Length: 331
Ligand code: SF4
Image (tube, rainbow, N blue to C red; front, side):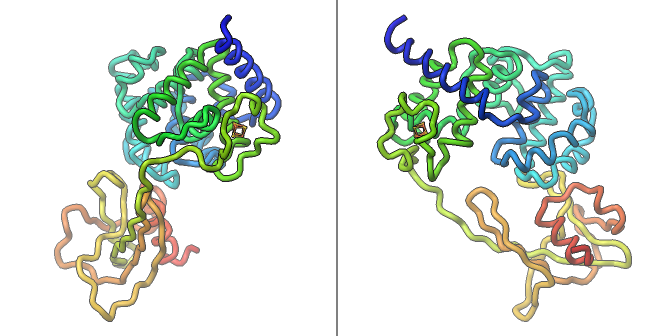
């Protein structure tokens, strides 16, 4: 064993030993069921663990198997995802389940190449399923792993373009080779979540500090450009007819298949919103305003009335669910 391999072996052992003692016990870490792991990985993209925990078990009550998910209506899938945001993940998961049932006999493939052919599965998710479910030495790079690896090698080049990206993938690929690749990947993620955190890494209690070359870890990783925050106002109408409310079914990519309040085409200067809130989507900060409106003489093709009692069963993005709840006097 050469010096580099020896260092890697010791590094892996130290990290895994720490993880076994201090790592959190999370439901997706106590299963090797590829479907359960796939769902957790899709949910965890851009969503915190504490939020995912509120959805995870309920998901399997609704869709206990990949096959049941494949046969579900898209609107039920979106409804179950409601509150997790970034709904394209739910659609991808649904498409993936359909594809696996149609083309793979209902079983998720166990090799990276075939996993990458599934709709909505990128290199990270394929690596996660391959290593966590099938214990294959497949590298993963999520935000936590990127931060840990970049600091370990004191990577000063930007991580969001070449050669930074390739450096990290090569390092992840090198380190994952060894016994228990799934446990190793989990440990790396956990180190980033609990110890090597973005703003205040706890280096003094880091189990791999003797292998770390970061001199100013809080300055790493570096990015080439910081996305500028874009502020935007969106106006909607609150139109009620007896016990019914006018809603619009979205066709655009953001909320495809979900129901929102209808858009307000024109707002008069003296109109005052009956509800407003701000929310963020990636780099957009959206100021949502709802104005009261009159029932239109002719309905737009994507608009329809819904009884108040049926609204809880419709898939709605969180800002619109909140608007409707408040305007109905719910909270
Ligand atoms: S020593 Fe500090 S910077 Fe290095 S991996 Fe550990 S927590 Fe991160």
